[in-house]
Amino acid sequence: MTCVYWNDAGQDKFWSVEGCTANYSNENYTVCICNHLSTFALIMQMKDESGSNNLLEWINNIAVILGLAFFACAIITFIFCSWSAKVNNTARLNLCFCLFLAQLLFLVGASHTENKALCSVIAGALHFLFLASFVWMLLEALQLFLLVRSLAQVKVIHKEGLHSAYLLLIGYSIPTVVVGVSAGVFPEGYGSGQIKICWLKQENNFRWTFLGPVCFILTINLFLFCAIIWHLRLTLVHMKSDISKIKDTRIIVFKSVTQFVILGCSWILGFFQGSTLLSYLFTVLNSQQGTFIFIVHCLLNREISTNLLIWT
Image 1 (cartoon, rainbow, N blue to C red):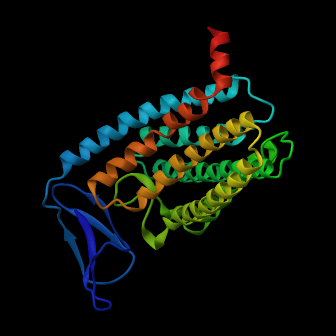
Image 2 (image 1 turned 90 degrees about the vertical axis):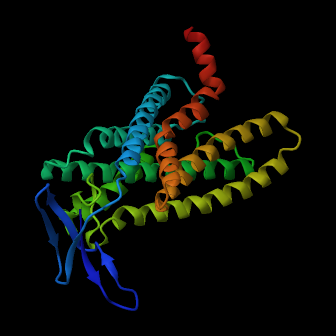
Image 3 (image 1 turned 180 degrees about the vertical axis):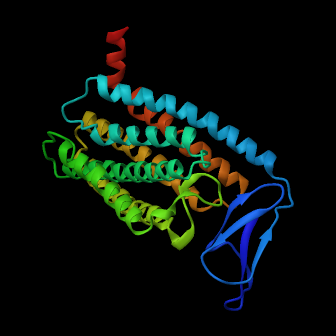
């Protein structure tokens, strides 16, 4: 059951869900809530799509559990393994930590829509954790840009990019401000909407409190990616005589750019959910972010291999 109204503004006329939600529904009646006046109706979905939805939900749960396991492995590796003094893993560690908590909370709590207060809290926590993940993705790309620029200028690198304290301040203050302002302006925006999960509602375009920052961060990451490729080209030109340094530079850039592409580009599929194929791709790629991070930054890392040999 879907609550709609007849939108006859302009040349196109159609049933719209804008401002209307199904507050309660059972086999006898449905309660609709709309924040405006118009001609209302209740539309019933006649085609049975429960089978495909159940399959997608089943695949999502299995994939998320697998991704959480690899997130846990990556977090443990970043904390307990010894790293080069030039490597700052603050951004990667906090990125894994935020995504781990976000996916775990989404897995166990997003479907609990029966308690409105709890559902609103879960939606707010998910809003904060996913926004923080995107901010840490941006900081990771910035770290890579500063590293490659230093290599291009033939500088001695003591530490990649910004100090850990500044990274922590930026990484958690920005999502805190965004979520705080959003909750203060429209607290009713958190909870269960028409998709029946604890997330951001469609009323008053409230979802753009998440989509807006995401689009902004993905745009900046795209520019940083182009700048990284440009500086990398200059770096490799100046390193023609130092084969080992060229190899190390290519490895660093390959790992970081691979993470950027996997973590950033996979979210772009979220804007194109018109087909079942894209829904499956979006589910699989985003649920396996922990797997990709563990493979690229842990299994393919020589320092980690050395530590594993020592432990065994």
